[in-house]
Image (cartoon, rainbow, N blue to C red; front, side, top):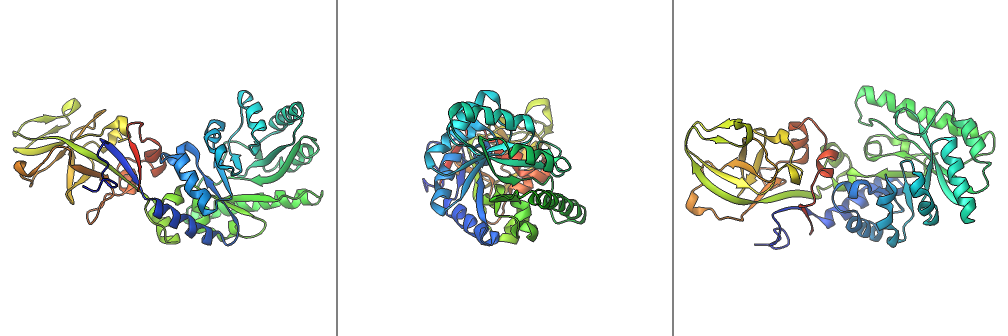
Length: 378
């Protein structure tokens, strides 16, 4: 047994290929065409371990780390890389965030005044970026109001608002998304042109997330100075893999906990959603929804065992999932053998396969990986 690939002390684990991660970062830096590369490490680096990923990306020259919540920034401070908070900062976080030099978002006048007051109290200048809502509809200054807000906030003496950014709700290259995203880019540029007439310019201008970086050349040209890349770092979306020549970083595994032949007519799992039509060799796999397996995989997915696809039988439970081992011989099996849930050679089950089967997306799957899942860096 290769103990790097199959750790001896894990019942469920995700293998994270650090060389593939380095390759992907280098490819994305090339794709950025000279712009800064800001690595998005929110949600524990999409479930794959923010501190380990941050150390690798620092070695590769990441210009800045982005997080969604202040608590995600704290363990990354030790790396000495600038950190930007993309989402709003709360009052109970504000003093520490200012003291630690986090780049904070200004999404309205009230947030700017709160940050300015705290910075004045501490006798410092807080670094901030304006967050524009150009069509996401979540947070930020509406583009139509942005010039007036920016002009006022730039007068606050304890803020250094030297950056501005926005976000796409959908940056895929289909016709509808293309038109909508291009309108967002134009709104953003009009704000920049408007405030430039008042002598206001920005050192840091960023809009391109992973999808936009892959498919929209405009976000890699002036006036933009940086891209933000998150999911593409892990090479798990087929479209980005092809467009940027990325490699898949993460595969998911568990163990064969038990196996036996169940007679025809046996029911499997909660709510008896599967009844066997014939005597069947079944295997119980040591992973369930507490580990991040969606309930909608029930009777709806294959796992890979010894290179063969094995259908899920019955409902996924909290700690276990049953698969068919039809075609294997009982005497040849051994408890503890590795079962590949996502990944594999030859017969591959991908993250996108799971996402499609569950009517969700890869982001939810990754960030749902539970605390029992060992992050195994190879």
